[in-house]
Amino acid sequence: MNTNHMDIKFAESLLDIYIQNVVKILDSNFGVDHAENTMFDAISLLSDYSELKPIFLKKVADTFAIRSRDAFDYNTIPEDFIELCAHELRWSELLELAEERVKTFFRGDITLAAGDVSSSIRDAYDDKWTDRMFYRRYNEK
Image (cartoon, rainbow, N blue to C red; front, side):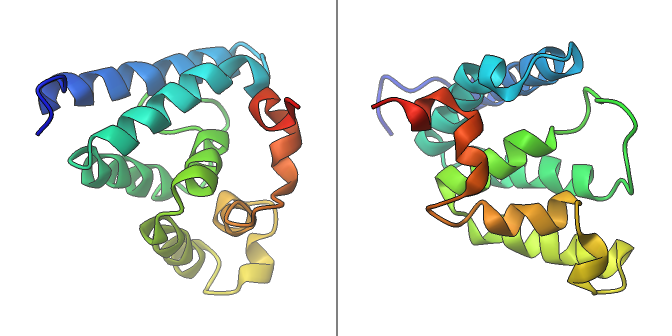
């Protein structure tokens, strides 16, 4: 382990803070362009600390276990952030969790999941993901 790395408990705490800040920004009706720096900081943390992967995937699973949300919840992960993580990290487990959500809430029929994160997350794995246009980082030339 790199001596510059912080303790995993501190890293997990920092990840929670990043997620809560993303929720606060999006809940205040600011777009992802205002939350993207925090999102990319969280993604960098996830990349640097492989021990965070199962912790983050559990949080995603807990988020996906909720049928629908009318408002942002500080105990869940915003869908935009999950999609960005899928695009950046390309973890197969995120797709598996999305497939489980389709089975649970849409009887396994992906067409019934149109508009749901379990459907849109698949698109995030494409290098030409259409939601890239909402992030300044991808549009800087």
